[in-house]
Structures are given as C-alpha cells and as structure tokens.
Length: 135
Image 1 (cartoon, one colour):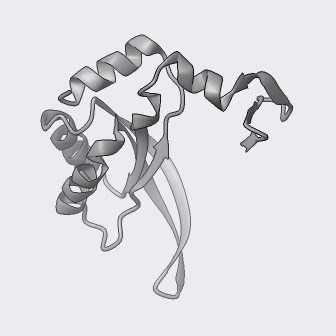
Image 2 (cartoon, rainbow, N blue to C red):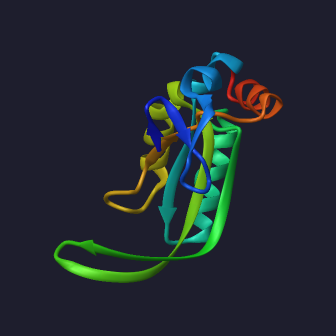
C-alpha cells in the first residue's frame, strides 16, 4: 500500500499529498489503534466474546457480521463452512489481553486472531475509542 512513503489512492495511483509523515502528524497516537479480526462458527459464541471484550474495556466496540463463508484447510482436509466475523476496535497495547480473552471463550483449537493497524481515523472516533478502552 505504501510506496516511496506515499499512500496508494483508491484508484491505484500514488497520492503524493498524503505521505506517511503527514498522516501521522495530524494525530500523534493514531498508530496505537488496531482492528482485530476473529471468526467463529456460532452467533452465541460471537456475542459472548463481544460482550466480554466490551464489558472488560478491552474493546470500545465489536461488530458482528453474519453470513460469512469460509473455505480453509484444517488437518489435511478442505472445509467449506458458515462463520461470522467479529471486528474488534481497540488499542495495540491491549492486543495480548484481547487475544487471551478470545482464547478463553473461543471453541476453536486455533482461532483466527489478526490485528490490522488503524493508520488514520476520525479524531472524535479515536478519542472515543481511547476513552472507552480505559485510558
């Protein structure tokens, strides 16, 4: 996505006006936020994970997206199953605690727990995210 310290635009062209330095200068703590992706096979389990993370202030918000279809390899076999996706908004500093809480509740032997850095966002939203996760 980044090339020569510039951001790639939606159309694949480099946006020279929005460099990494400029984006980060606007808000110094933006690198500390992450979106964590977790899949699960039941709505009940997804809701338990989401409520536990928000109740414990490990996440400001968890979106639950139903109707996902996952095709994956597990123990030498190809699986094609329905799942749901949790979008967990939090701070990078809380990743290990979020991972631990998810593993505590999750039924999968190897749950998907992937963090994607949020490099830019609405200042008021990020303020709310910070406040909602205990800082």
